[in-house]
Image 1 (tube, rainbow, N blue to C red):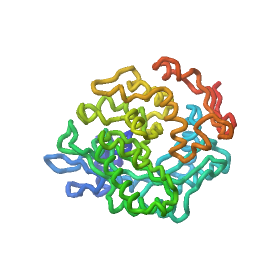
Image 2 (image 1 turned 180 degrees about the horizontal axis):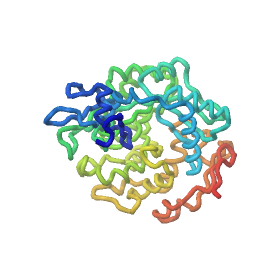
Image 3 (image 1 turned 45 degrees about the vertical axis):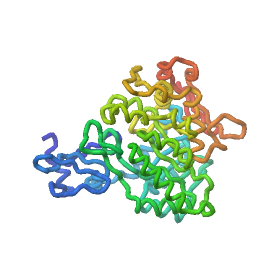
Image 4 (image 1 turned 30 degrees about the horizontal axis):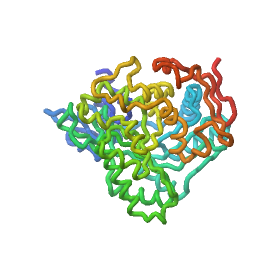
Length: 409
């Protein structure tokens, strides 16, 4: 009724779901007879069987293929604006999990022209042509004075908790007719994982649910056992699981045992605390956002922001890690306050541990002679101020490679 003649697609904040109107469904040829693709779901009315416009994960591609592409000029402007915001917030490097060689070309152009100074650790989306190209061409490491690296492939094991597409071992507590779904098959994933070991390409895989996390741990372990270590190009591959959000407690020690890095975003915990208990039930929260359990098991836990799913502000992430409360100071039932981290641990989550996850701990991540002079000066000492004051702390200066790239006025 709002837009009866023009196609409309509205994407959920986490990118794992979209709502489209009837015009868009018609353009894509989606009707009551269209089956859901593997790794996705076309939501349909339970009585009529007609699609209701909700598309989850891979089902979104049925409509997205008809979207006009972003122009190079618009993409360049978006990168420039995004980099400007990140530098003003105090970030000196971001890790960009996914994309294409077209993105690599844009970044390279902007670095060559001196239009961006932020360090970027870029992953390429997989499976597909990007994976084959990086296997053929090899990684890009430390280009533009250690500002740009491309050595990682990004996979998805499942969907998201918010859209109930994260793969769970048991059904959702608030939707017992579903337990989510996996978004990649073993037979598609295994050859790529094994080739990555032989070619020295890092792997990072999105996994939210406990089934998704167990699946990808099993796949990593299978690949590592299939390829003799003498054939591994890199002795420590430092493969990652992005989010590691809901993990069966029995699987937590497996990360450290396999040398797999749980890359986690603290702000997810304070955003999800308002709906995760109903999605999962109290019992499953024992393995949810379990930062301290991972650390105690021997894992290195690099912190991130998952922007633009979350706001991408370092002080929100630091606060969430040490407080485990929402931005109003609320923490609900069964939210396991023992899983919060100390301020020293939180500092490592956003400095030396991400550097390790990027094979760069000898270059950056701490203030030491001989390392890159990447520094952030804040308006308060976040190691000592009260929790709520962390949220009021602002970046006064950002230094990258010894150059002041931002100074607050």
